[in-house]
Length: 239
Image (cartoon, rainbow, N blue to C red; front, top):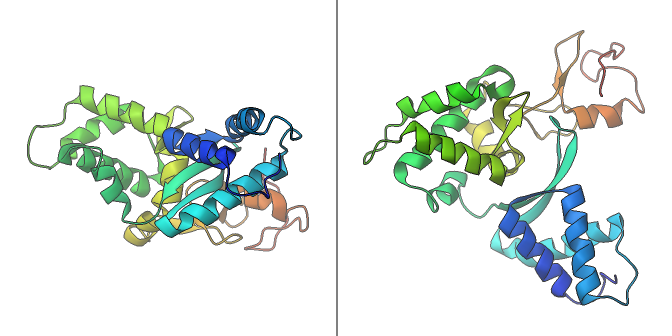
């Protein structure tokens, strides 16, 4: 596939897939790119991982003017990479408000706030459902049945994720709500010392309790076998 040509049906098709799915694993994304290339560029060689990165960069060059971007995220809890379609043109809660009622948006806000302030940013599923009691929006009350449907929707869309059978921040929230959560919960949300990005999940040094992205630490330890904070030998497993 010759990705250096003009913006093509392969680009358009992959963007549409990202918009429709919100969150794609690396393998799902590569399968979609391969199918699109076979359909629209059958005479070209099969695409490679590097060419997929190029296609994504070319799409981002087109949609950046609209405040949109396809982001590749390394999701620490599963150690999988995801392509996420992110709309960064307005405030995160405004985007959620376009699709849900006032009470449902308030429930989403309550869930995010609870996750932000809870150690390790995980809560039990039953505790998540019980947060309906904290919804203060006017209008029809939010039932637990509807809350359960919403949680399932947000899990599928990547706003939430199941981590160790608990509810946690999903990859889409980590991309679209990182600054919102960092600004509103500075005492609970940290940044990684190595990449300077918001730290939702990570691995903790057993010498100084410094938290870092597992993916960042895996790269760092290839060069230096010490904690970047306390400078003592790193002994915590990264698998």
